[in-house]
Structures are given as C-alpha cells and as structure tokens.
Amino acid sequence: MSTRVYTGLARRERAGWLLGLRPGQAVATVGLGLPVVVALSNGDLASALLAVLWCGPAIALVIIPVRGRPAVQWLAHVLLFQVGVAFGWSRWQSRAAAGHAVDPSEPDLPGTLARLRFPDGPPMRDLGRICLIHDTADGRWGATAKLSHTGVGMLSDAQCQRLADRLGGLLGTLANRELIDRMSLLVRTVPDTGAEYAAWCASHEVRDVPTVARRAARELDRTVGAGSVRHEVFVTFTGPEHALRRPAAAAGGGVDGRAMVLYRVLDGLEDKLRGLGAQRVTWLSGGGLAEAIRTGFSPASAAVLAARGHGARAGVPWAVAGPGRAPSPTARVYRHDGFATVSYAVLMPETGTVFGSLGGLLAVRTAGERRSLALHYEALSPRRARGAVRAGRFRAGVMTDWKRSKGFTTTATDTRAASGARAQERAVAAGHGLVRFAVAAAVSVPEEWNVEDHAARMENDIAGRFELLRMDLAQDSGFVTAVLPVGIGLPKLRGSGL
Image: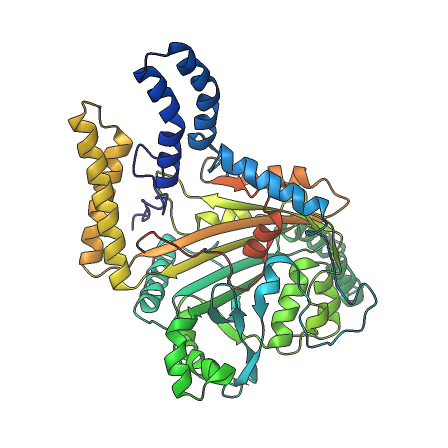
C-alpha cells in the first residue's frame, strides 16, 4: 500500500487579492504613492523626488513581509511589547506566591489564560464532575480529556492510513454538528532525568543473578532507556456560545444546561477517540485540568504530584495551577517557574506531508528536556466550506486572468494555486469537509540551561520537512497555544467570508 501524501496544506487563509496585498495594504500603498503621482502630473520633478524619498521607505514598510508580518506591523508590535515591559504589564506573580490570602477554588492565571473560566458541570454518568472551559473573549465552551495512547511511531503505513481516515471521519462528524466545531490535540513529553527509574531499579534489584544477565540489563538501560520517553496526550473539544445557547436553555440554562448539551456530544465522541487508538478516555475534573496546567508551567512538579497519588480526578487547587512567578518575557523566550520555553508555529510544506511526520518534533535529545506539539482543528460546516472554496477559486481565477490580460507570465505557483482551488471545490461539492488548522510546538528546559541550544536542536530535527516560525514578541501566548490543554490556538476569522 503506497503512502498517502497530503498536499495543499500550506494555503493561507487571508491571501492578498492585489499582487499579494491585503485591502488595507493596497489602500495604504495607493495613498502613500499619491503625492508622487500628483507632483509628476504637475511637472514638479523636485517635489516628486522629495516625495519618493519619504514615500518609498513608507511603502516598503507596508508591503515587504518579514517572517510572516509586514515590517510596519513588526514596528507596531515591538512598540507595544516594549510599552508592556516598561509598565510591568507582562510581569506576573501569583497571589499565593506573594503571600496573599487566596480562595483555593479561584483560578489565578496570567496573560491569555485570565480570560478563561473553569466552572464544574454536573456529574456525567459515573465519571464525576467534568470541568468546563469557558473562553469569555471568543464566546466558546469546551471540555478536555486525557488519553492513554500508544502513539503511531511503530505502526505500519496501512495502520497509519486507517488512523488518518478515522481522524478525517471524526472531523467530518464535527463539521456536521453545530454544537462542537473545534478539536485541539496536545502531546507533551514528560521530562525524566532517570533518577526515578534508577531508584526503582535499586530497590527491586535481585542480587543473586548471573553477572552476564546483570551486564546485559545495564546495557539495555543505556541503549533503550536513553531513547525512551513518556508522553501525555490531551484532547479538547469546544463549541461556540451562539450554537449552545438555545439547546442549553431547553436543558435548564446556565452552566448546567450548557454542560448537559456538551455531555451529549462528548459521549458520542468517545467511541471515535477509541477508534483513533485511545485505550482510555478520562474527562478531566477541575482539579485534573488544574494539574495539567500546573505541570505545563512547572514540568518538575509532575513527579511530585505523581508521588502524592494525584490523578486526573483529584489534581491540585486552582489557586496554584498557574506559575508562582513569571518575569516579563523576552522577545524570543518565555520564562516561568524556573523553566524557559521557546514556542514555534509549524508551517506546512508546499510539497505536502504524510500522516505521523510531525513526530520528529517530540524526539527528546536530552534528559530533563520537554517538548510539546499541539494541533488545533476547526471543522467548517458544509455551508461555510462551500463559501470558502468558491471564494478561493474565484480569487485564483481572477489573478490568473488579470496577469494574462496584462501580458504577465503565469508562474508555476499561480497554476498550482488555481488547480488546487478547483480540486478543493470539487472535493467539497462531492461531500468532503474543509478544515482550518494550526500547528504549534515548544521546547522547555530548566532556566539555567542554554535554551537556544535546545531550540536549535528542535529546528534541526524537522529541517527540510517543515518550517518552524518562532513566535517572536508573543512567546507567552505561544506557550498557551503549544503547551496547555485549554483549546486556545485558532483565531476568529473576521471579514473573510468564512
């Protein structure tokens, strides 16, 4: 069975209409170029030259992209970043760390997480209460489950293909449900220095064994144990408030009403998660989700919590779920509770990719290092999918026809974009779904380590297959997207027709 290659993943949501420019950029370019045109029309060459001297650099700042953002946008972001640092807006210290009296059930979280609320829903069957995630900024409700999964590293191509088909079926199910339309899959390695395993071996070692057997066991520890790493897998499902409001009112309203509506959908998704290889699906309570957030900020606390017997249903109080202290993040690194994290957006290759190819981002090279990979999906409804592919096909066709009418040569990129847009429209017309997605990755190490060395190793592990775009000036928000299982990772689309 040949390996299936997925292409067309690198298409941008907000491609420019006019020579790659967005409407705002085009208007700004025309406005900045008017003084030059007016001076030339009046025959005033000196004034035209002066206008070029100051309009030219301004136009360049507007239209020239630098690592995904126009240069003028970089300048604005740098200014806002420095203002936040100067006024201390980006520094953080929890109330508990400051010695203040706290309510154990009240979340105390920094930055992007401050907009989230975590009410407990009513008991779901015999599972106890499930924590709901209420995003007050985007108006979304969701829940998170912890999965037990063996991974895909040792599966054959045929088995990977079956999992890919089932993942497509799950996303297709979400596309046809109005209540839940987003799924976030997060995989985190668990940092392990080997001390816990060494202590276990010392306490369970059998003394009277042959020397050859003892030597062979130690050799296996050095070879196999060094390459072994534990993983945590979380999945978060969320839905928009406007879709939940009416059925929630029929179910009694309030938090309990929204919880009951979500439970009905989540109950039907458990079987599909098991079809994806999940051996156990555990929906997190408030304490369990707080523990997942806590171990995200402080990986070293995972061993302590495990030793105390905490689990997905027990967890930690919300008052200590966040970091105790987080200084103002630098432009390229986020520091929190004695750890340093570098976050990336993972850009898809133009040539396509295969199922499981992102696994290289989780290949830990040094004991004590933690890597995280988050995939955020939004399944568009059939109506939105049809509108999106029509807009994409029309845009690609207009640009190709305009270039031909003006005598410009159509490039291979233009041809590929036009053919891809038509193929996508045919697929949606045949009943297939359309999915927005984003991929984020992060590497975390103890603060005293050189985090740049570990970031470079992560970039090398995936070089030639994917491009890692470092989330400069937004490392704290990137940390939430790549490391924490709260369903934040895809922005709203405003004014895009989707």
